[in-house]
Amino acid sequence: MRWHIVLTAMMSLVAFSCSGIGTKQAQEPTAIVSAPPVHSSIPSQPPTFMAPYVAPPSNMDLCGEPVPLHDRDVLERFDREFTIVVYSHAQVYLWLKRAERFFPWFEEELRRRGLPEDLKYVAVAESDLQHGAVSPAGAAGMWQFIPSTGSRYGLDQNPQLDQRYDFEMATDSALRYLADLYRRFNNWTLAIAAYNCGEKRVSDEMAFQRVSDYYQLKLPLETERYVFRILAIKAVLSNPQRYGYALPSGAGYPPERFDVVTITTRYAVPIVALAQRAGITYREFKRLNPAFTTTSIPPGTHRVRVPEGHGKALEQGLESFLASYRVPEVILHKVNRGETLTEIAKRYNVCVSDIKQWNGLKDSTVKPGQTLRIQR
Image 1 (cartoon, rainbow, N blue to C red):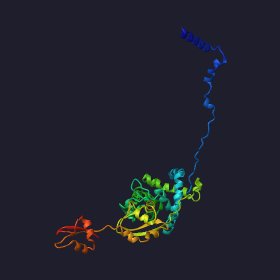
Image 2: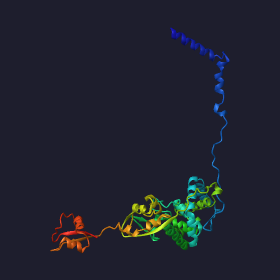
Image 3: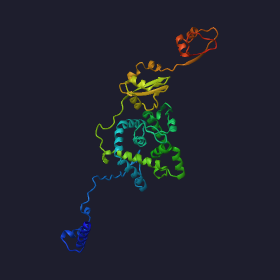
Image 4: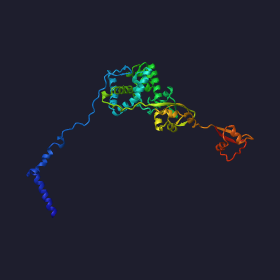
């Protein structure tokens, strides 16, 4: 009975509201439904960050050769790489920092050889100026030599040593290779393209397409973008302030200063021991000498770098130090009738006790026909 009374009262209230007869408060929901959405009355806010538009340069040259930016296709291909580079803020600043270390040295080498200064940008495009760079295709070092081309230009590669990682030797080889490519094509743009995909590929495509202009050649996509990427890098790094980059004084990486010591050894020498002798860490030695790919210096003659001022410590008594890592030569001696261990030791200028140790002998007795190991 109680629930019946409540339900009847509620039905009466609904009927009263729907009849349109009632207070102002009863009619307000109708007005709310017909009103515009609340959010539409809030003014839209401008974005807090807007990327400014950066226009590409209207004139470019590469190694003194003009780039035909009046050609719409060439302009758009260049603009693609320029836009990617100019907005890569972190990467550009890393380039600027590393350039302070390597560009002065590159520029001096290029002047000495009579080569265009723009070739320094090839190293940026190849490795971001990192001498430890490795590509999925097996190219290595700052100039990204593949094994065969590296060998052609004097960069030794074996399980313990890979000179493609040596920034001085690789730079010498790369500049010689680029100079050879220029002599072949008589054009720096084609030479740089050939550095990327090989001189045979460029020559074959020129013959097939009957075109001698890089900008009009159809080449592998990587090579088509390669020269334009170098142009974009040149545009930004040659005038960083124009594009909003301002590296503070002292923020770049200073050139390395080091002593060079020549080491000639017939035996493998642990790098840890060599570094300790020079008063530096294993990591520091490996950083300055990235061509050594294992934990040892292999037999042969090598130029090693140590931080400036540490060369003398390494050179002092170096010959005897290296000799201490001599691997003994093992001679097999067959005992003759009547020979004694004392006579055998005297013959090879070793001690009887050593022969016993090398051969696990408990006493000095030997038998004819017995084979002994002698270390020298």
